[in-house]
Amino acid sequence: MITRFAPSPTGPLHLGHAYSALLAHDMARAAGGQFLLRIEDIDQTRARPAWEAQIYDDLRWLGLTWDGPVWRQSDRMESYYKVIDDLWQRGHLYICTCTRRDIQDALNAPQEGAAFGPDGLIYPGTCKHRRRDINRPPPRDAVLRLEIETLEDITLTFVNNGLQVASTTDDLHQSVGDFVIGRKDSGTSYHLSVVIDDAAQGITDVVRGADLADATQIHVALQHLLGMPTPTYHHHKLIRDENGKRLAKRDDAKAIAKFRAEGATPADIRQMVGLAP
Image (cartoon, rainbow, N blue to C red; front, side):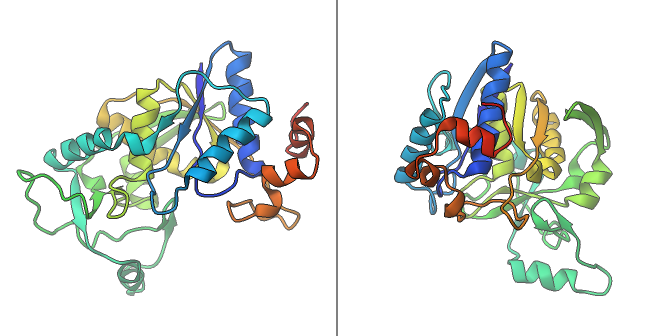
């Protein structure tokens, strides 16, 4: 078994991160497997070295150890560009120039109707009929979407929380829409980079929050399209505040560093998130 914890260095780790990291770490260690650490810093406009250093410090304080060197996504851009180029040449991608307002306006049209998917509003396909020259490399400074209609009409299966789940291409079209593969600001998208890195690192079990469960069908579709293995998925409960709201990076009141400063112990953190000391 190989699990991983893959935080973004864009703010302090909070109790929800601790829960996810502890689950992935404990699962791997109990199975005699490996626990890997990956820094997902493709968003260089928000990533900060100080937050990355804090991640290492907090995880070590929690008593977690990881195997092998830490992977940093910003060091792997060429790997993502290679796959983007391949998908472009195979006719799966198109350039999208729509703004969020354009998408909202299109979905406000009487014949459309707004619907939400893992990435927010489901894209109505406005740009997919534009001419694309697959003989030229795709631009690095453009939004590139994957056209669902270019995928094989098959049923994809994966295991989520011990249950067999099936998703068809039509399901993907209805509940996700043409999703982003390449971004103007970061070059690649979360969906693409996480699939490539999980395969490259041999991840067998993905442990992450329930808020990412709906994105799993995107990742499984990409794995099939790229000929990559599909891990087993474990989507855990979300740690919420006293008002029932899930924690976010801006919730400094629930930051691990704050609890540490107030004298909490790693055992206290485990108890706070409902894990045995």
